[in-house]
Picture (cartoon, rainbow, N blue to C red):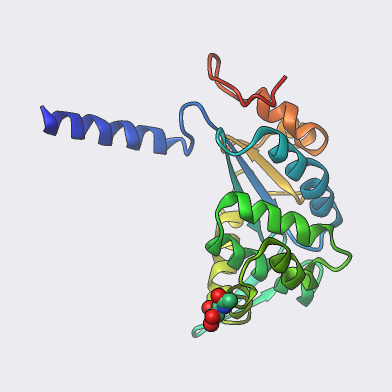
Amino acid sequence: MKMLFAVVTLLTFFSLKVDGQQADKVSLGVYYETLCPDSIAFITYQLYPTIQSLGLEKINVDLVPFGKASWTESGSTISFSCQHGERECKGNKIQACAKSELDTSALIKFVNCMESASSPDRAGKSCAQKQGLNYTTIENCANGAKGSQLLKEQGVATKSLVPKPNFIPWITVNNQHTSDIQNRALDDLKGLLCDSFPQGATKPSGCK
Ligand SMILES: *[C@@H]1O[C@H](CO)[C@@H](O)[C@H](O)[C@H]1NC(C)=O
């Protein structure tokens, strides 16, 4: 009996994993780059206020800082080229490193703080201090091989999107991208997420 229970639990777990979402949760994917004005506007005017209002209990957020960058590898060295230049690569690395260190709630707060600054790529330290985070860990990561590896992972995720992004930020909801999802996300992310729950699901109390 115990064995049967274990098997059923495992099967349930995998069937939920298959679609990349849990039954009563909505998943949001944000493919962005740190110095892109449209990404900055989305994060500060849509993402952050929406998550403040809806919380993260019923929403999975994946922030993927890469955008239209590309990379080449020679031996163990990974070199990046970013749409808004070298400084954007640095900003993307800082946020890829923060993503590996922080829970989603702290990450969204940190990213929002950086993206609200006049030079997002230079705001990591003051934003970390504001949140009581140890910036040394994030900075060491961003300046080293780990930061490159983590940024490449964001690149792999971005390059594997179907359809391929033709605009940044690129938004997915429940792993889907359509022009309706994209357009609504950019001006009513909260409404979009609230409308994306399966029928009968208990929505966050912020959905009115
Ligand atoms: C911050 O992290 C660094 C490197 O990971 C560590 O050496 C240092 O002791 C930490 N500082 C604090 C205040 O925790």
